Image 1: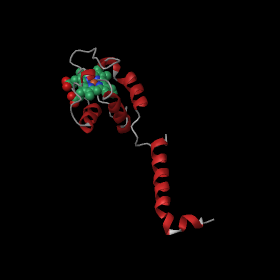
Image 2: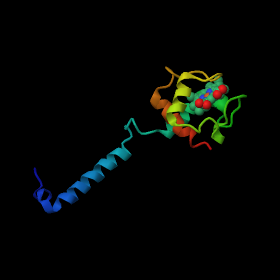
Image 3: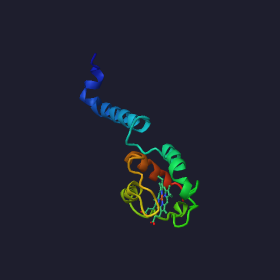
Length: 115
Ligand code: HEC
């Protein structure tokens, strides 16, 4: 069924605005949107894989591990941090094959909330 009112040129801007709102609503509230960073999941993964050395709240408990709560090691773009975590760095093990890129990006978003 076509809506005669909405097909009138006079209402096309209203129709486009409604369409825009609907699309934004779906993008913002869709829980399955795989690209959206997930801080909650990032926090769970951090507790499981990282807190052992970097401390529950980012204050490192291992000598030489950067204090993430003070932004140590985090003053670089997400993709550089991703590379360090994926490939490992000195005493830090590589998480390639353990965590997906999306998992690591979720953890990085969480790390940026620690300071
Ligand atoms: C076994 C201990 C250990 C674990 C587990 C560990 N790290 Fe690390 N991490 C380190 C150490 C040590 C360094 C310092 C490496 C260096 O620069 O010498 C480091 C460095 C870093 C850095 C700075 C990287 C850079 O480029 O300078 C970040 C960010 C980081 N870790 C995050 C994480 C995250 C997130 C996890 C969990 C997925 C994790 N670490 C797990 C020990 C650990």
